[in-house]
Length: 210
Image (tube, rainbow, N blue to C red; front, side, top):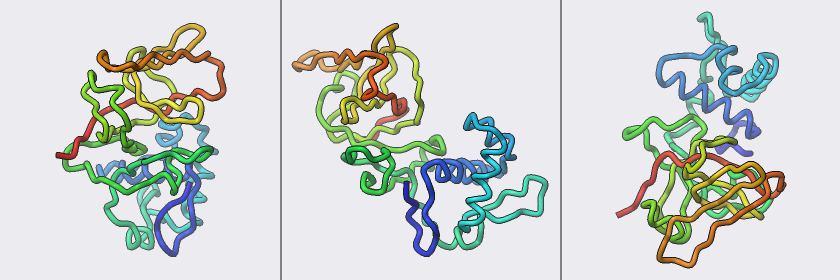
């Protein structure tokens, strides 16, 4: 995973997620402790300590005199721009969904909603979800999650392709169900232990350009 600021070292996907979470908390004037970051990501505090150390070494974070000791560095503040949430276009095979080659641009939604720190926007292709109000060309806001509630509209990775469907988790399989009664779309039933299947996240909003 690459970060897009000139003159600064690239970040891994995990480092970028931690940085975004810290930024989100700092924007709310609520600097997180390392313990809080560890709880949010479900990681050991030692792992978070290492990640924060890398972010400091790479110039993104600076020591802060307060008791929480987390702040964005002046170098990073001078480089970053209000890019907003990354918009993912066609996903390159084998690459993480937020890899640089997948990102078409950024949209700032903070004046309308407060998305999760690691949220992204996905371009919808096709009309398989029109009965759920999601049209071809719409942009859906996705909150990353490996598990979702049954029947939620979510983004999944199946057979090398990213798809937006209503997803049902059954005992031995995962069902990807379209929402277009007038179309010829059929549900996809995939074995639960199939390595080609992965839940990427739940859809939390839809944007349509008029």
